[in-house]
Length: 250
Image (cartoon, helix red, strand yellow):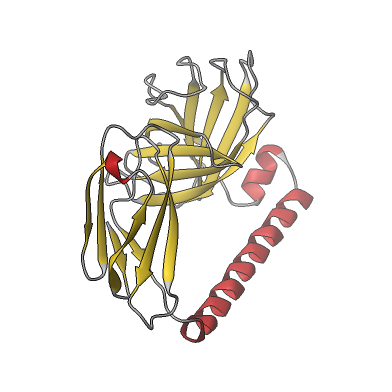
């Protein structure tokens, strides 16, 4: 379901391979799409909609990508005119840049400080409870992928961070693969957190021990449920979906 803040024109939908959808319903400011089983993983379809005459912008274009195991049930599209959105956009950019600089500053400080357990203690990342770890379920991954079903994965938690460490084993038949983006979604399909990605080397055919570490900040009260982990490469052309992911509780 796509919700717009500007009324759409009648008969304004142009959708590639429309016959592969059970329903395409257009209301005044809402578009509902119900795909069929004919859509295969990796399929990309262009969607274009026109707004009512006199609106700015005049149209909106989307690229629909079929990804099994994850979907956004509702997407809100904000199409305010440039004069209305310029200032909020600039503010958001400045806030994003400030956050990036703070994270970079913290990283540089950590790099210049002590390493090992001394570094973790000095940075306040662990206390007397140390670092808690738990082995994830043996049913990973749950979707057809380039990974062997012998995947090894562990979840960790400190007082201010969580991490997932995965030993990747290639199932063969694929080009070199490197994760560039990792997202956690909760049981309702809502994005819970983006994770920083570090991979020891690209995964190629025949590799059996490629280490992938995903990390994000989280207090002991956050990320307490069961999550789905989605990994994507730089081209956004292949997704690896792992579930269930649970972090230890302190």
